[in-house]
Length: 199
Length: 199
DNA sequence: TGCAATCTATACCGATCAGTATAAAATCCT
DNA sequence: AGGATTTTATACTGATCGGTATAGATTGCA
Image (cartoon, rainbow over all chains, first blue to last red):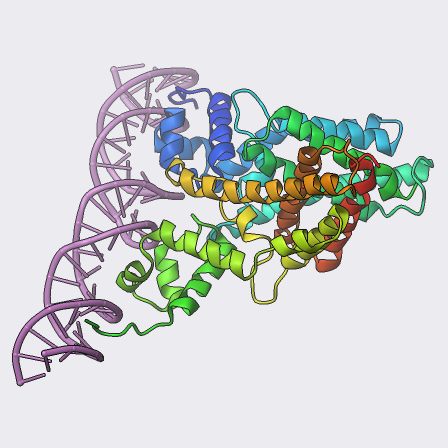
């Protein structure tokens, strides 16, 4: 009923895999790289995580659960839509840089282009990015319902603008921007609030 | 002094290579893919363009010269910094989508992450992105000198914000955004102008 | 102790990677 | 025609890709 116990910590290994995928992207990270960095033989890797795509998706989930730049609670708990966006974008800027981790959001960077055979991985990440935008739009709709956002505002348009800034932040971070620079970008984006919601 | 003439149009071949690198990125495009898509044997490819990196850099140059989203003249010829930014960002949104070409800016998308051995290609593209930001900052500085931008404005901060939007636009386009959506994002970013320059 | 079950290391699979050696084919010049 | 020069197609290089077959090692249970 119980065979030889595995000799590595699965969670630790997954975290190292996440960091490697984060730094090099899906196609830039080979199974050989992972086997070496995790100090785990390839058969053990496959037994524990399935194939490369399975491992990547699990690493993505771990990223969202730990380093993830997005918090639904930030949106829900804020009293107004504007306050929710301030908190969400401030957190996002802060989450682009982490000591001991690669700069820039995993979800934005790890697979934007690549070979046709990996199109499903890219589509998965596209859906994650669109989910972020949709949540922003939903919070704006709630703001209109709550009365703290003018009902002339276009939730989709405003959400898409801020989602674009969030995507751009990841590239700025990967290009070497410091925390102060990222924070200034968010400050600038937030300064547009009144003109965006038509207040 | 002259041997067998080459049987393909070098410019045509380079354009096809550009389109493939644009769609799949540097590492997502193999020499075999290029040889097939261009209908050119690999030895002819190497003889005409050097190695993969040389070909990519030449394709990048062709992109900037043809599909490139950025025009120095747009910045120079506008009477005010604000007008220059309106034109530059409108053109950028329009350049994200081209019939018969992949969506999203080549320079932003084709190599943001990857293997360590291709770090120099990524660094090259990072420098191109920073060049865009620096030109935006220079135009703002001119606006201050010309008197059409308040001298309290921070050219670097404003330029970095708009550069971030430009980077984000490429990802939105690759994710499937339509022209109207991209235009709305630019409209939103431009609406922030007054609050950004402290007017 | 023996057996079923599980993990490990080694070595391998066919396919593909970037790049090239070789030799035939096609041109210009003399 | 002959020779120099360049491009072509074919076939190959060693390395690496994602993934696996095989067999030995380690466990719990009977």
